[in-house]
Length: 535
Ligand code: ACM
Image (cartoon, rainbow, N blue to C red; front, side, top):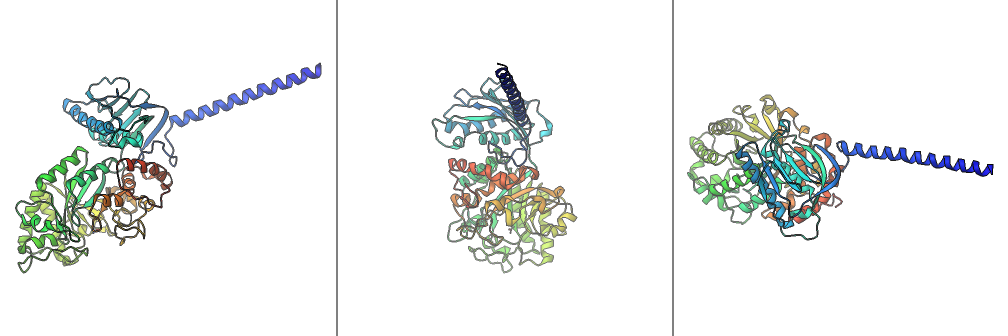
């Protein structure tokens, strides 16, 4: 009896001990969970909605918000005109969500969003978010996107898109998809104010439609600068009404045997406005004094012997130059810049300045000084590629676009810089030896290599305005080819410009990039399935 009782007591004690152990373990686990859901996801840990660029502060909570036929978009600003602009942004969001869901997404100006809705607002928002930052709160009841500016709302909308299933990007109705997004709290803002892409439309011409698609593709990664390389040896792509042969003759060629093409001023304005609606500034470039053969082929008076040079359709560089000591050159450039400035609402005009191998150094120095003055007199800030900064006429009012290693002059003059290292950020470099398109003079750039750089590797942080990836078009002339070179490298450059260096690592990024393959497929992007990414 006693023995049995003892055994019973021992068993009971063991059982109680087990209960206590389980309880304590449970509390510890729960506490751990709470901590995880309250804290910011640590660096290195993969974010599950796979957002690119990675947001600065991110907390995932339990539960989901679900889009339904009754999800409306409520918009509210600090003034009638701001509410009107937010309504436009709400309509932009609705236009993305409607085709795949088939839901109506009515946009309603109101400060009282109903349960189940999306609310976009600048009311009572935090000035520390700056001009592009936003806060996103997703609960089971509501999505609230707030920003200090309407631009911040536009950037935040790109996050909402990426938190939904990839099929949201499809152009036709997709049935049987639960349109859910995780409950989160996000506070996000960019590291750099300049996050750009350059497209060379001179070596091969790209239509207005292609350019608009490129702008849309950039916008989803929160990029905000679209640099158009409008002129080069092989083609002149922008109508200048006072010098019509520029487009009549200079616009009629491109690399190879194609017919070239050009944008009328009205078409260019259409592009600028399209970009502006996506909070992207267009920066036009007229490359000079080198890279000028298309202009020299259009007008005899721009040449020493008074005769037009032959059009050029191959891909060498460094053989052409404007006459730097003849006033006709500056009459011409003044007309070009005046007309271009008049149709460019952005603050900048890019004047090239690279690879002027036929221009004697003292003439280059003088020429760059003169064109800086012309741009400034037209109310714009000049930007140039190296060695533009070395001219005695270049001051801190101008910006350097870094593409080769010498920045001493820019630093001495306190010039701000846009960083475009060819061995990392030139999208026309081949991914690898067996890749068909592109060039390799700056090396091969697989996707992982393209992601692993920081602008501070090239210049001191305080001098850096931001980054730009560049797509030169010697070897491409279709949108599919453009996409294959740009994707999947472009989203990585967008992240380098947006996300702080400390929050970035290839190991973590690649796990967010892989699910983006489906998103790219849903958008019909002809991306390269780089074998360096384990898709
Ligand atoms: C350049 O790559 N020539 C700017």
